[in-house]
Structures are given as C-alpha cells and as structure tokens.
Image 1 (cartoon, helix red, strand yellow):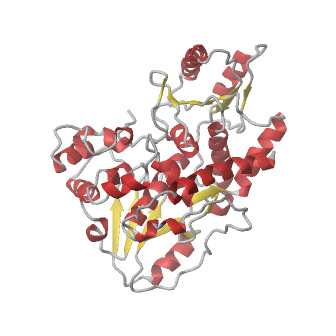
Image 2 (cartoon, helix red, strand yellow):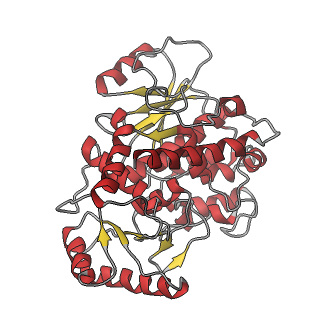
Image 3 (cartoon, one colour):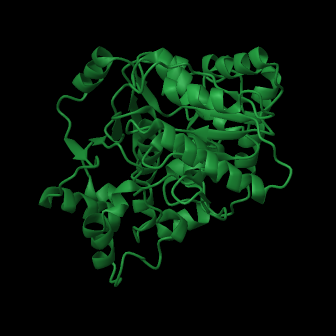
Length: 406
C-alpha cells in the first residue's frame, strides 16, 4: 500500500519535470530557471525542509514573507500565489508556519524557501533586518474596498513588481488565490504563457508540485486508510466534499445524491462506492443510513464531531490534507460544495476537474476559484479599465483563469 501511495506522487512529478524540461525559453525571472526544477520525488530523508535558522543578510537579496490566514484550503491557495509572486519579483520566499508543526504537514522541495517555525524564530529573523525597508501588502478578501486597496490591485495588474515594491522585505497577507492577477499583467503575460502551456491552464497544480510535497506523516494517514479498508486504490470511487454552512444538512445531502444519479446516467455501469469528506457528523450519518443494505458503500477518514475548523492545530491540518489527497485519488472524480475552498483546492492539488454542486456541472479546469475577481465593481472592473477592455472579459486573460466563486 505504501509503495502505491509514493508511486502516485512520483508519476505526478515526473510529468511536471517533463513539461518544464521541454521548454526552450528562459523565464524572465532567473528564479524560474529550468535547471532548478525537481524531476523526481525523493524520500523524506533526501528532501529536507530548509533549516529553521536566521540567514546571513546580503545587500542584494530581498524577501517576500507569506503570512498564513483563514483555513487550510485558503492557506494553500495563498502559498501558491505568494510563490509565483516571489518568482516574478525576484524575491526569496519566506514562509511562516502553516500549522504548529509544519514538518508534519509538508516538505518543501524548492530549497531556496526559508521556513520560519514559530513566532520567536520569525521575530529573530526580522530583527536581523531591523534597519531594512519593509512594506506590508494586504490583499485579503474584504467586504469593502478602499482607495489604498485599489492602488495595490493597480500595481499587481499593470506594473513591474520589482519596481512597484522596491522594499527589501515585502509581507503579503491574503486568503485568496490571486495568482490569476499576474496573468493579466502585461509585464508577465507572454512569459507566463510560455511556462504554463497545458490546456486548460493549471498553474496551481504545477506550482504546488514544484514547491512542496505532503510529509511522510500525511502519507502515512493515507496509507493507513487503505490498509484499514482493505483497499488498493480508489479508482472506482467518486469523492464527495460536503461543507454545510447552514443547518440544512439533509437537503444538502439530497442535492449531492441527485447529482450522483445524474453522473451515474452519464457513466453507464458506474455503481458507485463513495469517499465522503465532511466535518459534519450528521451528514456522515445520513450517508451511512442512506447506503445501508445497498451495493453502494461509503467511506471516510476523518470522524470530526462538528463543523468547527481547528486550522493551525497540527493533527487537524494533517488529517485535512490527507483527505484532500484521498479525494484527488477518486477515479470517478469529485463533487464539491459551493462557497468552500477545501474541495476546489483538493481538485487543484490533484489536477482534476471537479463537479461543482451549483448545477452539477463539471468544471473545464482544475484551477481553484479566484473569489476576488467575482467582485465585478472592484478588481474585475479595474482590470478592464486599466487595459482598455469594455467588460470583465479581458481579452488576454485566459478564460479558464476567470472562473469566479459566487
């Protein structure tokens, strides 16, 4: 079982390495030089998280500090966005821990990333650069927009990032997937198109594969699930990610069931074991009762008692990440909840196109939603006005990158 789990990640990364190795063009940022790309997955003994130590300052090096915010799905979204931001702006990415014990969650493959575990370590690192210029960039999703935030989006959409932010340390706070903004920036469009050439585009998948791997501890959770269930894989399973934002857990599950029936008609012969990812105990009980005595079985890894997220607690985040991996291994794809980043991130990490419960329609891309772009009177309209477009459909921005979460 354990070898199968590792084999999956080897296949994913080898395909990534092949993609980049085939490129004959040098990316504008030296940080995206193809020789730095990993081509194989190594064991945890070979790939180490960068030492948690204060680096020796240099006059040339500048940093982008990623500040985690919101749930695990949001943290993955912004981590990938920050990584692309750092590459485009020639900065070293500094990651403040995503959870209390980050080494139990992930292993960074890009060895240039600096990981600062704990508040004291971060403060010590900042003290090293106490006389350096610092700029705090807040691009988190907010209900209200103000002039200063409009100015930030203008910079991200239309300016050279190294010139727009000349400070030595740039801290970035966000809870959204803002990477699509860079595809709309004229300074980087042509180069991004040359680097990310898959159809449809899936930069989140490619960047996340290049940046980190799940830890051995996370993969052990996945392997234990297979061993406990006596399974070799989930190739004949469909994954359900059900997030209940109201008390209507029964009607929500019924809607998912209707979608499954529609999928069954489209896939003649599918009878359907189900992998269920839900924090809601009543939702899991509903599906267990619904499938009792039928040919359809339902399985899950995590037995949470409530909808309360405990992001930042190591064991909670490890189990959440393991469930993302299991969802991505379901051979018949996954059906995900609207308004939830968790399911869309699970699909994006696996590079598969999920079925959104809004209309029970399969997406045309695995890319996660860019929720801020959906605020048409703000960022979308700003992009259109900056580049002379008459509507939100900016001509040079790939359609697959313009999906929005409603």
